[in-house]
Image 1 (cartoon, rainbow, N blue to C red):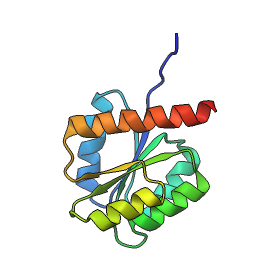
Image 2: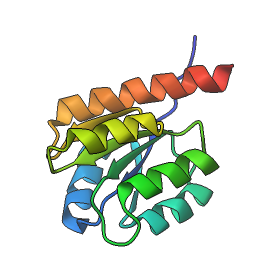
Image 3: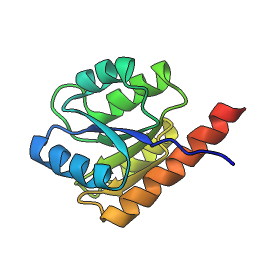
Image 4: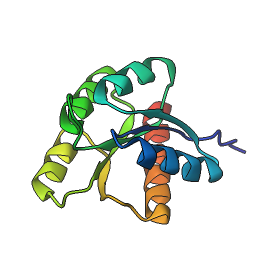
Length: 131
């Protein structure tokens, strides 16, 4: 029988109160959650926190979500990234998928949708790791 360890999630968003609330809600569902408030912090955090899934805001000051996605995929190709956007911008979502994002969700995402999307991304990472 396969023992499933907690899914490790890195939340990346410059809205600190949003990230803190989301972290608490995901932890209540049994996920291991770390936070970063910028693209630079996310890349730093991934050095010491081997995340399975990154929830990444598209619009952030400094290094935006697209640049962060590209750097995460270059340094950690197996990590799955779910883009979060508060702005209905299909072009950005498509670009993100082309750069290797697992999927994208509109903010604020429905908690169940977000949780199941994280589980799907984690399964994909586990399959890739097993190969």
